[in-house]
Image (tube, rainbow, N blue to C red; front, side, top):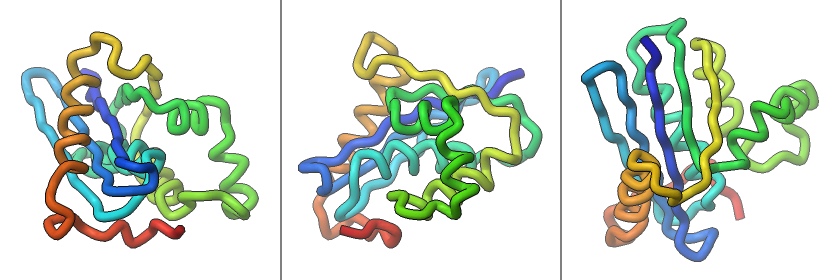
Length: 151
């Protein structure tokens, strides 16, 4: 069976209060993950949501299908940009901390990334959006600091 991960990110006033929402589906099992941050960017949240989904997997060598509305995430991998950045030690690349973390998780599984148009009648994408925006709408005092974010 394939593990399906759906993810979305949100940032108010990009950069600003941010959050991600992620759903994992494996057979009849479903898990939702979300988290908010005091200050970050939409791209970081899009990527962090995918990473959180991958880190939630308890086994390795799984077939994983990741669906996201983030061209930033999907194109970076599917077009090979990420692997070029890695060869150049992420020189002058934003979010290198998250990309390095992603690569660790990515290499544990057989992953297919799928891009979908955001907010386009896709129930899991819509739910992830709700999770992400709910997190980014929380009281700022309840949110974590995105340690890797740099202005």
